[in-house]
Image 1: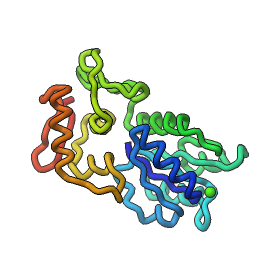
Image 2: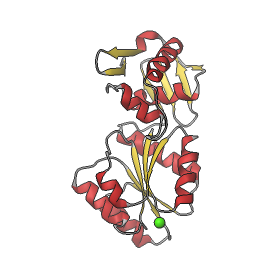
Image 3: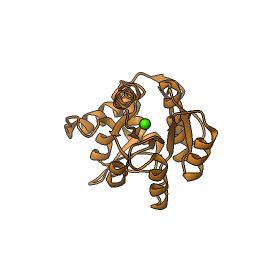
Length: 217
Ligand code: CA
C-alpha cells in the first residue's frame, strides 16, 4: 500500500513513516498542505492529513482535493477530541479520523480498511481464484494452504490483490515498494515477479506486453 502523509510535526511524521513501513505501507511525507496541492496523487491508496497545519489548513486541503474530484480515502488527525473538529473534517470529505496521540496499530488497521473498501473489498481476506491474501494476518494462501513469502513478495502480491483487474507498470510497482527518495533498480520488479510466480504458480501473474503485470483473474 502507498500512503501520503501531510503532517507538520517532524518527529511524529518520521515515526509514522518508519512504523507504517513495518505494516507494509510505503509512505511519502509532506510538511504542508500547499505541497500536497501540487503533488502527483496518482497511485496512492490513502492519504493521512493532520487538521492542524500551518498556512493552509488540513480542512481547506480536503475541500480543495474533493472539489478536484480526488477520490482517494482520507483519514484525518485531530489534536483534540472535540467533536466539532471531527464533524467538520468528515463534512469536508474525510472518510475517517483519529485523535492524537496516534497508535500505529490502530492507524494501520484503519488505513488497511479504507484502502480495501475503496478498492471494493469489505473483508480482511482478499481472494482471486485459488489465491487468498489475509491482510490482517499478513499471510498468503494457495488452495487454502499457507505459502511462505518474503516481505517484498507479500507487498507485490498485495498490490495485485487489491486491484485484480488492473495492470501495473514496473514504475507503479516500484512506487509501492520504495519511497521516492530511495534508490531504485528497475530489474527489481522482474526479479520479484519471477520469485512470486515460482511460489504461487506462473500462470497467476500475467505479463501484459509493454504495459506491466496483472493477476490472472
Ligand atoms: Ca499539526
